[in-house]
Image (tube, rainbow, N blue to C red; front, top):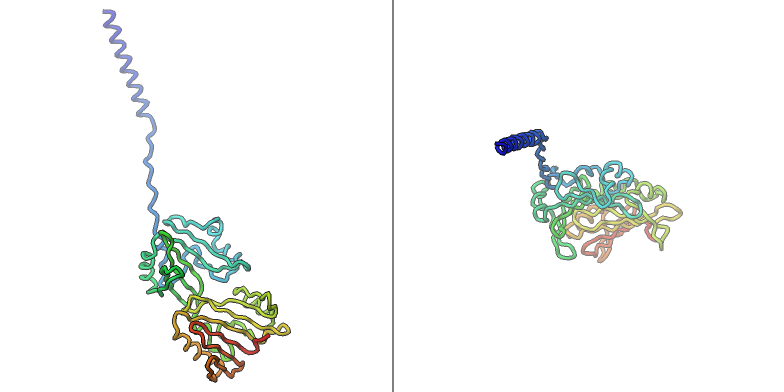
Length: 306
């Protein structure tokens, strides 16, 4: 009898203990399910316009812009040490490249996760057919140019992904202009200006004196939309006054552009006297052109010699 009572008491105690354990279990707070991270967007969704242009947050940054101004427009981009990884987008990394000496913007580079041909196909839907070329290694490179806004987008491949470089570009019409006696890129006439004025007015082009020729200033020009190569200006000074300059401009993709350039120069400087290698335009000012090259013109304006 005693054993039976002991067994019953033990069973009751066990049931009570189980009940308390169940109470503790049921009273424990339930963990909320963890929501999965939202899927990241493709970087191709950044490009919504009908013409090539860098997307936010670097859409207002332009080549030639002072570094201080660029940093103020997109501080988060410049806070990143090795490229800004755009939140919410898959594999998008943005980097703004500065010119070495002046700390002015040279280009904006955007890495994308997608391979070259995928990006090319999608951008073609938005921007139209690109100009297809090959780089020095024979790999495909694609160019979209929009001279009206001064923007060139160059697409090239990386090992498994691709990158777009946003730089500058100009048309033949923008280079030449329509004002007799000077070229279209001259926002302020070069001839007759002193060195300080040229340095200030064309500062975005990073003018610099040549080591072997301190009486000159050299600066670059954007490439024409018929070439991958930029142009250049070499200004001659005598007694601190610009007396002439030399223009180099490339038309390497379209030889027909050569005829367009020469016709435009005639409108600005008068009918040319032909020669085997050179053309002489009467001006004013007098202009001589080396037109013998197959991919560029050299244009000497006024008193360009030392």
